Length: 256
Ligand code: MLT
Image 1 (spheres, rainbow, N blue to C red):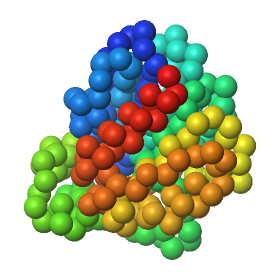
Image 2 (image 1 turned 45 degrees about the vertical axis):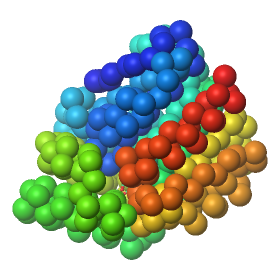
Image 3 (image 1 turned 90 degrees about the vertical axis):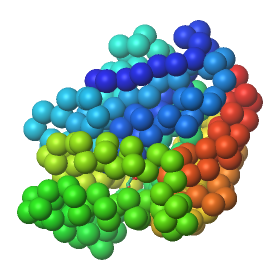
Image 4 (image 1 turned 180 degrees about the horizontal axis):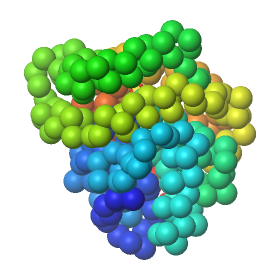
């Protein structure tokens, strides 16, 4: 599994889980700006970036287990887990399965509900499209959906690099992750069991996991905080890094 680290190795550890279909580099606006006093780890999910994908057949369950293995390999007992979108689905399953490993949780542009039938059928269509024509059209459509319209039109910094990353993946892994997301469990019933500090972040123009989903999680996790990021879509950490980093840093400072 490929990962990068920055900051103080003895500081509070924060592990970043990227969204779909990206890699650890989507966290650059955080890794390049957050203060050195914490220890940051950003890794590539199995099959993405430089992490090996094998047959491409995956589950959110497997991704959560991979995170636990990563923590074991880093001799890390507890960490703050920060997951965006699919990274949030993994973080939520991880919180159910390995609650003792959590110091805090940051749920960015994600939701606890499983896919609706409509969403599953859309993913089935995307799998078919990728099998037939490769990643190009899929990536173009996805890029348009993840950014707030204004940011997409302005081609804000980070978009060309993100597109390169999206196109670099093995289509097998992309299709595998689509099926993994379609088959994921609903983590909503266990939200009230989360007893550690939780920060929920969402872009005000997120079309994929909209603010209503964030509000719902906020209502079900006692003591959780909710920050809505102005001028941002689904990739709020890239679209308005300053507001995202402020919210994250305030949360981490309280935790430590
Ligand atoms: C992501 O950003 O990880 C995906 O858009 C999530 C999803 O498709 O549900």
